Length: 136
Image (cartoon, rainbow, N blue to C red):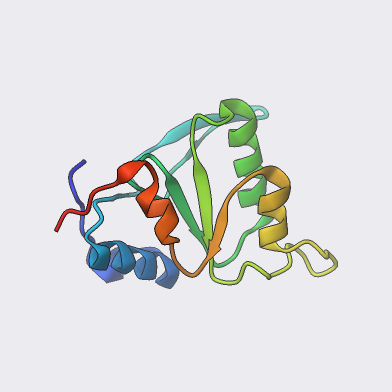
């Protein structure tokens, strides 16, 4: 996989910039928003563009805000594709509640629906899965 380095002001958020810098600093090859996964919402076709794809196929989605629409989208993708795509989340604050009246945090939601998650950056263990080699 060809390494793609982004100028940090090209990311959509500060968290994406932080994770991109982490991967760059570790010499890990990755692609940024290059995969488009077509899925069907009830009554409409839609497309999901993941934030980061690691060489081992792990998809990393960074979230500051984890809106209802995002959660719904990821549940639909999981229902339609099962384990074909290994989507994991990096949150700014995994303890943030999904709603004002909810006791469920972003992390709890991930655990309920079988998604791995991390705080602030990609865990080294995710990067090392399946023998990923550094580029430098």
